[in-house]
Length: 269
Ligand code: ADP
Image (cartoon, rainbow, N blue to C red; front, side):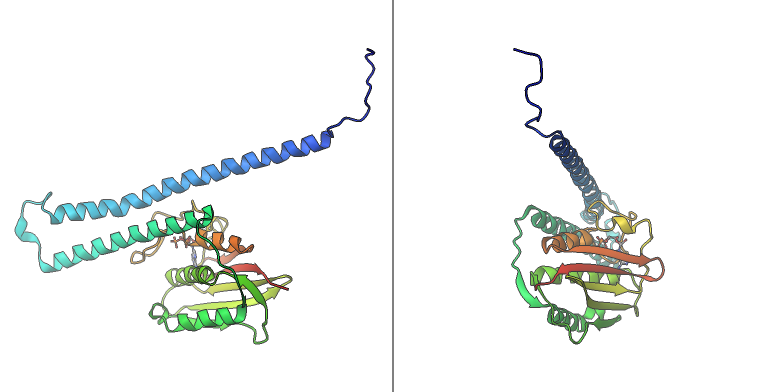
């Protein structure tokens, strides 16, 4: 047999091999990043679970006399303070566990989406009028910015998109002071519609903006105002739900001026 190359054209195109190998490397990077995110989330959640649990444990120990010799000390006022503390810490745990479970179910696909075609203007209007009579927002100014002639239809899971708006409205309220304005609006951008929730509250630092939708993000140990219960997963839930709608999220914010969260959804037709 001669040593001369018999076949000029290789069966496997080298370019295709290179492309495949690049794709594999990219998939591997994504996998590592997902693994890193998963681990950091578990770390953060474990940390967040520990704080209220420790507070509950020491309050219960105190009330059940384990660390207390002078039994007479507890007044009715003390008792009511302790109960309030227990209530708050238990609520923190509940919210954390519920949000974590909800996010996991959405991401694993076990939480099913029921898409329905709805005129987006009507959906937003109904949400807005329900918020307007909600006690939580009684001290805030709510504004609806929906164009009169907006006829666009989108396929949404009504309950889940309402959850998205709940989370955004709650954040606007939590990170603002009484009297601030929260605006719910919508406009068209090419083939999408863009829903936005805007506030003129405390705003988000430039450094933090790229991370607020991460499951692992925490701005500081005391992420939310003292009296609020929150899991730190609110915006991750928003992002996951929006992505299941084939949409995307964005944030614009300036410290001291306020924040706007944009939700882009593909419109039908
Ligand atoms: P949290 O439970 O901490 O509110 P989120 O996932 O809802 O968790 O938000 C993540 C972080 O993004 C918050 O801790 C806060 O720092 C910032 N953030 C979100 N929405 C707003 C807003 N409207 N104004 C200011 N900061 C916000």
